[in-house]
Structure formats: C-alpha cells, structure tokens
Image 1: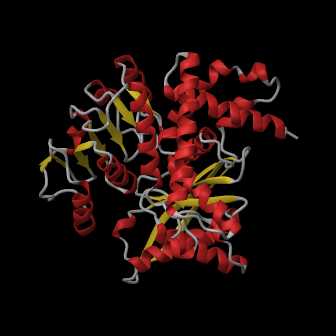
Image 2 (image 1 turned 45 degrees about the vertical axis):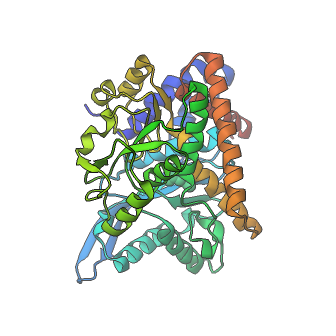
Image 3 (image 1 turned 90 degrees about the vertical axis):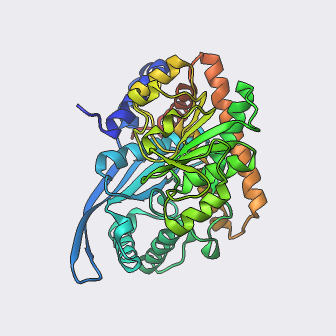
Length: 418
Ligand code: GLU
C-alpha cells in the first residue's frame, strides 16, 4: 500500500528519534506521542462563487502541529493534490525545520485542494479571503503565522493581511510573512529559500572539496525555489545544465543562460520553448550526469527506482519531502551526500522570521543586511548539523533530525504536561 506523506514523516521521525531514547531521558513524558501528533487540525468546506455565476466547492486545511518553541509557522499551499495527510506532513516538517535553524517558531501548514492556476484573479482573491475569514481567529502574529508555499506568494499574503485587519479592526503586519515589500514585507524574502539552498551547497561543496566554479547542476522544478536556486548557482559560476517544470524540461550541456530562461518563463509560463537549450523528457532530469541535483518541486519525487539511476554526488533538497524513505537508504548506500529538506530549504522561513521581527519593530533592514543575517543562520545551522553527523557517524538527515528533536523535546519537557 502506498504510504501517505504523513506516514512517511512519522516513519522518518521514529527512525531518527529512536537513538535519542526520549522515553529514558524524559521518563513518563510521552514525548514520542506528543511530538508525532498535530496539536490541532482544521478542515473545512470552501464554496467559491465563480465569475460565470457558477460555484466551486473545495476543501481548506490548517494544521498547527507544534508550538513548543514558539508560535505556529508555515506556508499555505493551493494545489489539486492537497489533502489533510499532506498538510499534516508538511506541518510536521515545519516544526523540525524551525528547530534545525533555531528560530523561535513552531510548525504549521495550510492549504486548499484546488486547481488555483485555472481561476481568474478575482476568483483567487475571493477564495484566499474566504479561506482567511473561515480561519479567522486561528491565525495571528503571536499565534500562527502563514506564509507562501506552492502557488501562493506576495499577492495572497497581502489579501490575508487585509482580511485579518477587517476581522480584528487593527493593522498587524506580522500576521503573515512573504508580503510585498510596500506593505511590510522583507527584502530578500522572495528569493530566500533559493538563497538558503545555495548557502548549504557552498558548505557541502567545501566539505566534499568540490570546486563550484564550473561544477554542473540540474534543477527539478522552476517555481519560486527552483528558479532562484538556479539563478544563484548560475551567478556563482555553476553550470546549470538542465531544468524542468510540470510541463517539460530543457537542457544545455554548456550551461543554460538562467536570467534569459527566467525572462522566458515570465512570458510563457513554462520552460518549454526556450531557445537557449534543447527540450527533453522531464522524467529524465534526475539521471543527468551532474555534480549537484536540486529537487525543488513536490514530495516523493525521488523514489527508489529513480535513486538507483541518480549520478549526482550531491543532492540539495529544495522541496519538502522530495525523497522517499527507500530512496534515502539507497542514496546513502551509493554514497551520495544529501542536504536534507529541513535544513536545506529553511532559508525561506528564516527570512520569514526576519520579516516578523521587522514588523514588530517597524524598522526595516536593507537587502544586504537580510542576506548577511541569512548567511549567518544557514551556515551556523549547516555546521551544527555537519558536526553532529561527524560525531555520530550518521547522515546529514539523521543529524538534522537529532538536533531538531532534541531541541523540541527539551522545550516540551520544560513546559510540562499540566
Ligand atoms: N512554505 C515555506 C516552507 O515550506 C516557508 C514557510 C514560512 O516562511 O513560514 O518552508
């Protein structure tokens, strides 16, 4: 039977939490149960009036998984395959992610099961605002702070802030992060996840003694994370030779001109048709003989069958949960170094934290300062994970889980169960 994303998330947690013996260390605290069940899940019907007078019925979700280390935090995804099990898994990974980079948040995630891209802008606004109205009191700057995820961005965050102001009668910019800069967003938030991925790649390359200048990379997914990762790699002199999206893939062994590709995608909405490369099957992207592979799309993209044929030395997980547990084992047997999602893609939520701090102070940082602070957080987190991996002779993923679980377990224990 196919495992749900939440089953996979729990399997990984149990696997990596086991050596920490939480039951021995914190007797009678039931920490394994406490840390593998969401604090609260909401699921609701959303009825949207379409421009043509028709009606669309969809389902909305918000899962607040854990707030032991701080307010719930995590994005909102609008995608046809969204369901409660997926949102739970993503919320689970969020609280581990905020713990790995050690920012004072818990973890949450939300979404709507909808083919969002097919809606008109007016329908999108109505749907986003209705979702926010239904959630109402569930979100707030000191309670649960949404952010962008798949198919959501600055526009949606501005709509959410607007509804929250209407409901509560006051301006609170910190109710969401990833807003447009003109209404309290942070410099560098949009590109932050990609930036963080590349900071991690730089650290890993140093450990692997891989010269990034002239190294090759393939990027699966050309949304916000994939495109910015490709852009920063390209700027550093890495040859990005293959890129894919939901519709297809392009390849150029001499290296794709990423700024030109980004301009093409802004016009056409897809990588296909780009003149600076040859089209090829998106399923073949993972098998390119590159140094670095970046999965930056959805969960479970790398299965065992795919992992078997991967030729990259380094995988940087830009997406959440892109590798199945069997594929994780296979890649580790093959000696492929994997920078795990909960570390690798934490740059987004880190700059979300900076945005929230700036909103609370109403004092705004320069792009240079955001970049510098992000680099500091990501490299410190990477080094802590790499040291933990060295000490325990384990993978970066296991080390990241160990650090995160230990931090959250300590917080949960100190707060008590009364
Ligand atoms: N959706 C992003 C993630 O999966 C960002 C979350 C946030 O900024 O709160 O990490």
